[in-house]
Amino acid sequence: MHSTARIISVLSDEFARDPYAWYPQLRESDPVHYEPGIGAYFLSRHEDVRRVLTQDQIFTTQALRERAEPVMRGRVLAQMTGAEHTAKHRTMIHGYTGTMLEDQTPLIRRNVEELIRPHLRRGRFDLVKDFGQQLAIWVALDSLGLPKDDWRNVHSWFQGVAEFVTSVTLTEERYQHCVQCARRLEDYLRPFIEERRENPGQDVISLMCHTEYESGRMSLHEVTALCHNVLLAATEPADKTLALLFRHLITHPDQMALVRGDPKLVTNAIAETLRYTPPVQLIPRKTAESVEISGVAIPAETMVWCMLAAANRDPRVFERPDTFDLHRTDLGPERSFTAAANHFGFGAGMHSCVGAAFARRELETVVTMLLALMENIGFPEDATYEETGFYSRGPESLTLTFEPTAEGRLLAA
Ligand code: 2IO
Image 1 (cartoon, rainbow, N blue to C red):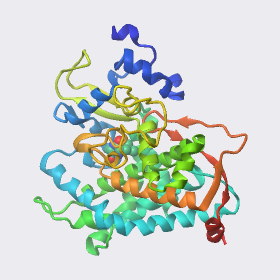
Image 2: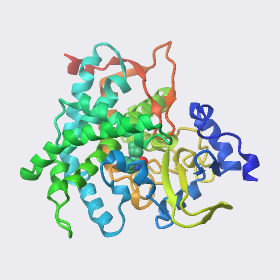
Image 3: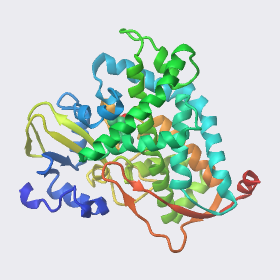
Image 4: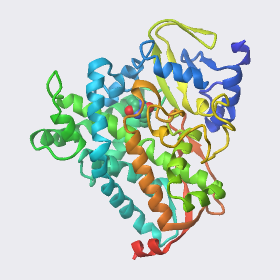
C-alpha cells in the first residue's frame, strides 16, 4: 500500500518549493516514506517521530559520525551517551541557563541596539540579511567569549559547516570545500581556547575548559568540537525563526495587535512559530536493529529521518494544524521550551536542544525590542516571499517597512 501511495520524492525540487503542501499526503498515505536513491526512510507522523526521538537505543545518533564529525572536528553532544553525555550535557545547560543566561541578556540587548540603530531612520531593512544573521552570530560569539571583529570570516567558514550538516547529499567537491571551511574555523578558534585554558573568564569556552570530569578536563579537541556545535546550533536556526515569526505576525494583523497589547504573548508567538514552521525540519537517526514503524519493516543500520514540520502539523495532535494561532491550547508556551514540549522544534528525548532556554531568551529580547522601536511593520508593495532549505528552512531575505516609534526615534538620534 505504501509504495503505490508514494506521490513524490522528498528530494525533488517540487517538494523543496513547498514541503507544507505535501505533508498531509505523506502523513496520511505514506507515513514511512522510502527514498530509494539514498536508501532512507522519512517519517511524518507525530507519534512515529516521538518514538524515534525517544527510543535512543534503537534509533541512534550514529548517523552524525558521517553527517557531522568531519566538520565538527570531533564529537558533538548529540553523539554522546551514558555518563559522558550526562556530564557534558550538564555543563552546556549550565552555560546557557540560570545566572550565565542572565549575564548574557544585557549583551543580547546591546547587540540588538547596535544592529538596528542604522536602519531606524530609513524605515526599511532586510530582517535576515541586514540584521538577523549578524545578530545570531554576535550573540553566539558573545556567549563563547569570542571577539566580534572577525565575525565575517567566522560567518563565511560557518556557511561551509552548515552546508555540510544540512545537506542530505553532497558532491565530492562541496565535501572538500566544507571540510576546508571547518579546518579554518578550527585554526581560528585554537588560540582563543588555549588562552581561556590559561586565563578563564565568565564565558562558555572557559566553563568547558575548566569543568572537572571523572576523566579530567576536556581536551582542546573536545572543546573545539563543542564550539563548532554551539556556533552552528545557535546561528543556523536563529535568524530563520526571527524572520518566520515576523512574517506570521505581519500576515496575521489581528495576532500582531494581540502581541502588541500583551508583551507576554511574545513567548506564545515564538512557540507557535517553532511548531508551525520549525527552522530545523529534519533530524537523522540510524536503526541499531530491524524495527517496524506504522506497519513498515525497516532493516538495521538504516537511516531514518524525522520530518519535524510534518509531525508538528499532525491533526491527531493539533487542532487546525495549518493555522497559526497564538492562543492554541494544545501547545503551551511554557512547556514549549522544555523537554516536555508537544512540538518538535527542539527535537525530543535525551538529545532535545540544550539551547532552548537561550533561544527563547534571545528571541523574546529581540522581538520585544523590535516591536517597541517600530510600528506599522509590513512588507514593501512589490515584495515576493520565498523560503529555501530542506533540512533547515527559512527565508534568505525578508524586507520590512515600518515607522519608528518615539523610542525608535530616540535610539536613532
Ligand atoms: C550540530 C542542525 C542547525 C545540534 C548538529 C550536528 C547536532 C544538532 C540539530 C541542531 C540544529 C543544527 N542537530 N543542533 O539538528 O546541535
